[in-house]
Image (cartoon, rainbow, N blue to C red; front, side):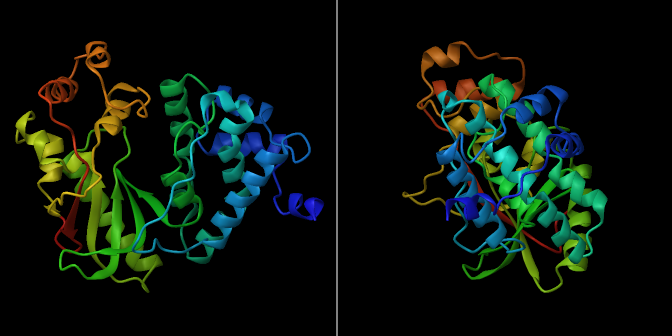
Length: 315
């Protein structure tokens, strides 16, 4: 039985893996470390069983839109778990990749969009090294990459979108496009407008069976407290003003101090609360960095908020 399970996952050869990793935007250093951390069912039986479970999960949901109650991220590994564990999800994505590309082709999605979406793996590995000082991706909970490799999430211009069911402003459930905002170029209004236009064209062409009513977003970028520190014409404030926010309730688990710590300062986000000694060590080079520190020193917290924007009037 164990041998049969080990054959379920077909990992690419080192030569093919190196080629695919380069295509996925992975640096030469990260490619070499990934190849050196190849999992083996005999040498790493526990990790291999974890790889099998994740592979079954991704492939069983291939092409599925997100359910209304969301989904669980693949859990992070501790840094001391070692390089094979920290690179395990990279090998998972390499194993699933051929099926992802076949699904894209079946939906008529052009290869350029496929590779632009999937090649965000390289920047994620670079971010992992910057934050944790180690190769791989396993020090992060895996939210977006599994969705990309199961055909649920797509990068279209500046923004990324998840197909899914979700709550609408009228409290009913329907098809929505969940927005993600990757780091990188400025979040300018023009780049957002262009991305919204691309999204409408893309999803109506390739997923006409999923009629979308709203764009939805859950992010610290929608925290209205940002407007207390940033000018009204800043890209971030103009972005959050596009959305109608869901009212907060007393039970909302929406603290985002750690998320901003990782995004703004490349610091591990799991060490909460953010103490004064940590704040004292943070750079104060941008208005957003200064706002982060001043806000926490005032005894308040940053929040991740949920907002909606009508699908047809996203400008």
